Amino acid sequence: MKTSGTREREDRAVSKSHATLRYASMRTSIFGGCFVIALFCAHFGWLPVTAGASGVFLLLALAGIVSAPLSYVVLSKQRDQMSAQLAEGLQKRQASPKSMKSRFAAQAAEEDAIDDAVRSQQSA
Image (cartoon, rainbow, N blue to C red; front, side, top):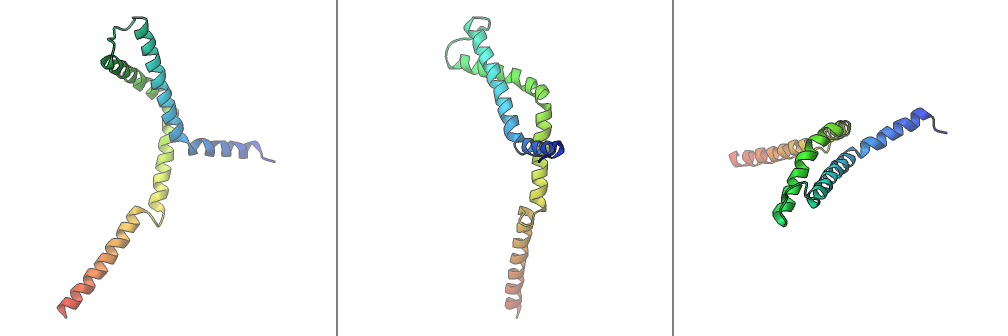
């Protein structure tokens, strides 16, 4: 039987594991909502928008301008969780023996050994 503390830790682990996906989907939803509201306002003539591609582009730009500060304020908690998840993943990758940095160092050491062997054969 799981205690409430165990369940709470599991919930936090699950919520952290998909923080980037959750943040991106919420940000996209806010943008989509702003775009739908802009379309609604343009349909009823509250926004003077011309028909065609330029009108749609104007509505997309307007939705982007409105949704950016809105998502900055509303999604601060999710953005913090996402950055913590990304920082944790980066630290794990850097600490692992198969990190890019260690592979480059191993490859450079191997090339140096080959170069030293070739130079010693050439000088002999």
